[in-house]
Length: 306
Image (tube, rainbow, N blue to C red):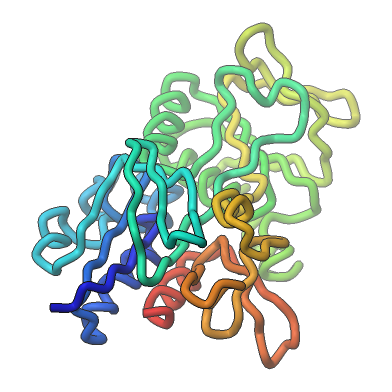
């Protein structure tokens, strides 16, 4: 009997692919996957698209049905948060008081949405998008309000703006730069996205710095650096993500912009690995560390690390 245990902290797409591929690769020991959300592993791209629009449900985004994990010999525990990693005793502590021993540890903790770094960001009506519940809250609030301000030049901002317009919600998209997605696709394609959004009724306010969210107890608008205010009682901030590397940092692993890993996704401890948004991987061709916040990177990391 194989008594080795692999503990996976995190239950996103990368974690799921790692667990599935460990079995495909012939690992016969115990696989224990801990997810702090009360959800089985699911893909996040639909959150800003068809799931946000309400055209698909949660089951459509799940990697596989809940019962399939046990059938594959994966012990999936949802709603459980890892609170500590003890590298000396080779244990993970959990918020329900357990100590889980490991032979190998995989950190797939992902990232969390950044909050707006301005006064008023904590007012009711200001949203970020990372989970099913976040998407549900944005959809419900936007349809009730009728008008929404979306802040962000990246994929989340562009996709949320497009999805909410398809729900017949009025949308103002506030950009720090000149064009949506310019940082990712360049000015020519950025201009295509701008024109497409405007053709569908999205109002774009470009080259604008957000100074504050204004309101008394709840959001009433976004004040810009030029003193103008974009009126909105619902605000969605798509201003980037932060790697969830606190566990690794507290355990004494090397952490800079994410958890440092080598080209094989191994951390500074040879028995601990990290993948996905949280992993700052050494790239031997570039001669530098690369941390990529993208679902396909997490998926490929999961397959590779197994």
